[in-house]
Structure formats: C-alpha cells, structure tokens
Length: 213
Image 1 (cartoon, rainbow, N blue to C red):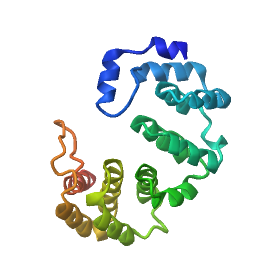
Image 2: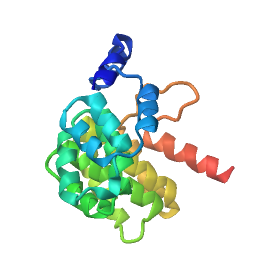
Image 3: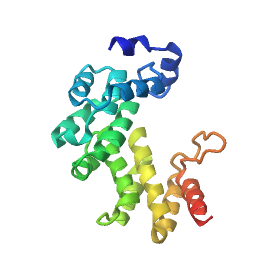
Image 4: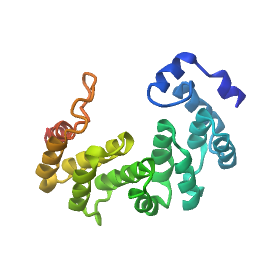
C-alpha cells in the first residue's frame, strides 16, 4: 500500500477523475508491480478488501480467476463501482472463471444497472465467440425497447451488444442498423481521428467493410 501511495500522481488522478476513476497511479507502473509480484491469490484478496482503487486494480492483475466462487464474484462485482475496476474485473477475472455463463444469466436482468451492464458485457462476448443458444432477435427487441433510456454504463454495454450482433450476423444486420439509426444512441459521441465511432450504424458498417477488405 505504501508503494502504491508513493506512485500517486496528481496529474494522472485529474485525468482519471474525468472518467469517474478515483486513483492517480499510472497503469503501466501498476502492471510492472503485478509482473514483479506475480500471481498471489491471498494477497489479491487482502488488496481488494482495502477498498482502495489502485489496490483493487493490482488485486485483479495478481489474482487467480478460477479460484473464486460464483458468490465471491457476485459480491465483488457489486463492490466494483469504479468504472476501471468494473471493466478490469469483468474482462480479466469473470471472463476467465468457470462461472462466467452462470453469472451472465444472473446479472443480465439485474435491477442494478451497473450489474446489468456487466451481464450485457458478458453477452457481447458470447455473441462474438459462442453465439449458439443465444436468442439474438430477442436481444434486439430488448435493446430496441430499453437502450434509449438506460443509464450511461448500461446503455454503453447494450450498444456494444447491438453492434456485435450487426457485425457478426448478416441476416440480422439490417435490423441492427435500423435500431441504431432510430434510437441515435451515441450518434454525437466525440470520436478522435482514426478511431471508429461507437454509434452502432457507423461501427457496424466500418467493421463489416474491414472484414470484406
């Protein structure tokens, strides 16, 4: 904890706080510590228990994802309110656990929008890698009915699922594009040069054209 505190940089914190993240540690330096410490499940749990954001990010880098129970993962998700912690938790831990599908189903329709967003993030992963068994037309119906008014984090996750359905499924592409055009979610999102807009119709068409090329 002392080492993490010593890495605190006010300039890094200022940038991170614009994204809702309350820490000032350079992530490259954090990854260097994780590389040195290597996997340590018990230390990871101790770091997580501090509640400190930098410590929790380090905990996610040195934990053993398959060592957690489904209940432990559910509890941790509900504690992971900071966007970067939530993102790393889902991508680095839950997706690698044996409980990913069980938790996807449990979180997908959770009344807490941050929890539901994680369920949608796992759903997007399945749309791309293992779509068998998913009712994609039903997902499009839910997105069409709920995405426009969803809180920001959930809206972003649903939009990602919409784009992936359109990219990966030619037979559903026209419908996905039409939903994106009608709802106009993230249409005006500021996108840096050389980056693809998160607006679903632009995103879908750009990725499809790359695949064709």
